[in-house]
Length: 226
Image 1 (cartoon, rainbow, N blue to C red):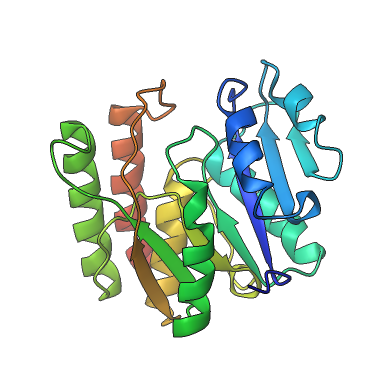
Image 2 (image 1 turned 90 degrees about the vertical axis):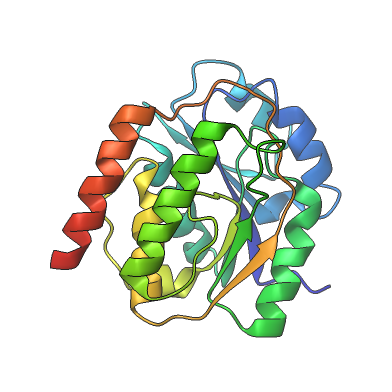
């Protein structure tokens, strides 16, 4: 498969325990110089681990700015380097890197501008509070965009980098991914979904259930005034 137009963008924060395993798998599929990692102010050994891969492009935020800010930094660098598409996945091993090729194949087949992973929403596969949160936010974004979205909170996705440059984004945290969905889908860009495994290793999450729920609700209503 010709991957020359595709790169990997990984936001990374305090992932020294999981990053080595992830990079070992990804570098079996992608050249190191097609990988961009944004170290979002980590204070552990995240940066040192990345330095063991000298061809990986490392962007380092001096302080933690949020997942959305990390993704935007990665997108800008990828676009500057001439890539057409970025595949985003988290560094905590909850996204199976073996599915990278499925995202690329789906994009090519459906000529999609955005390909979103969809996980299994069952009690056996996902914590109950995550099922409720994902179901509600996916339903609301579906209403807002007029497009059926099955897993709006999934961070495993492929994005057309040229299209991202057309928009201005205000969210720096986890809500950036919802903001991007609303803006791109409301504008009519092509969208596809693929099923991916649901993996929860119960590492500590950076999501604050109360604060991030409030921020999503604020974003949702604010979007009607864009």
